Each structure stands twice: as C-alpha cells, then as structure tokens.
Image 1 (cartoon, rainbow, N blue to C red):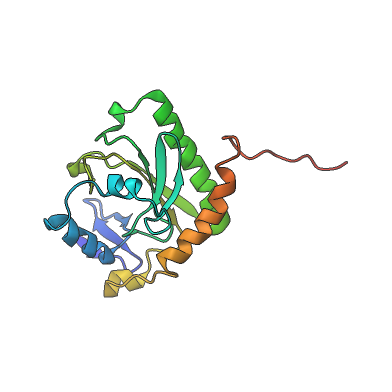
Image 2 (image 1 turned 45 degrees about the vertical axis):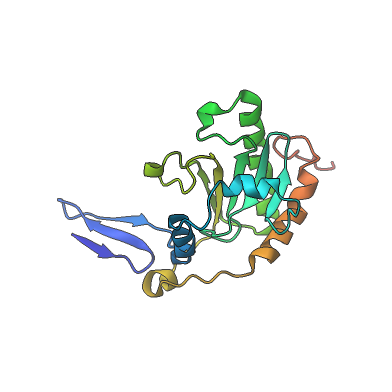
Length: 199
C-alpha cells in the first residue's frame, strides 16, 4: 500500500505493517528544463557553451580553476544548487586524470565553505548522476552536484500545490555565493585552521 506523506515523503506499508517514509525533494519548476531538454531548439553542451562565454555573472559561473569550473544550476532543486564540471568535455569520471579529480573535489570543499558562510544550510546532497538511467540531464559532460538542504525544505507547498517558494532571485544568490567563494579560491585547500584560545 502506498500513500502520500503530507511532509513530503512517500509512505509505504510493509508486509509486517511497518510504515516507512522516503523523503522527496519536489522541484516541479524544473519542467521548464525538461521541456527545453526534450526540444531540438538548443543543441550542444550547455556547460561548454557557458564556459566559452566571457560574462561569468550572466552565465552564473562562480569560479574557474585550471581544470574545472563552478556554475550555478539555472533550474535548481534548491537555492544555491551548484555544479562543478571539468573543462574537458567527457562523459564520466573514468575519463578524468588525477589532477582534474583532485581539483574537482578541492572546488567542492571550497563551495561548501562558501555556501555555509553565505546561505547557512543545514546539510547538503552531493554527487554525480552518471548516465541517463541514473538521472543525468547532460550525459556527455560529467558534473558534480551540490544541493544545499534546510530542515523543512520538503514542505507542504510543493507537495500539495506543485509550488516551491524560492527565497530570492538567482542573481542575488549568485552574488552572495561569489562574494564568499572568491577569497577561498586564493587560500590553500584543507579544513579550516583551529585557532588556539588565549591562556
């Protein structure tokens, strides 16, 4: 038996009568992305197209490294949804060399620091959807997702009304994250240093 959980999960009754809940992050506004993806109006790799541009703010590019770059998702699952992609157009992480993999995760660490300072989320979903069957919207150019999460972000509004309240414009979120990320791009990677208390 399957029923809807009003806080955003799917509730299932097992053979033993136990109720289990699977949380879902609803994003009906992403239908615009799905419609665009299924049409033939836009061809080619949007990541490569954004990377080739000269206006990082307009293209929502937050940072450029030697081998990878950080870009905001134009159709986010949540505020502050970022993607980190290699500059090389390859479909899987199996095609990336060790320096590129290292830079990708270094950028991920810095993005977490910037998101924590600018948006203060309660947690994150992070990972790679590799292959269409795994949910990859762009199979040809592998990318790493960081989705900030807040307690209660799977609330009744998207569940009951197919509506999600985005607290601010993408451009405003971009400016906040960029301001927090820029200083981190020039500091050594690694965990933040602990300061000793004066005795």
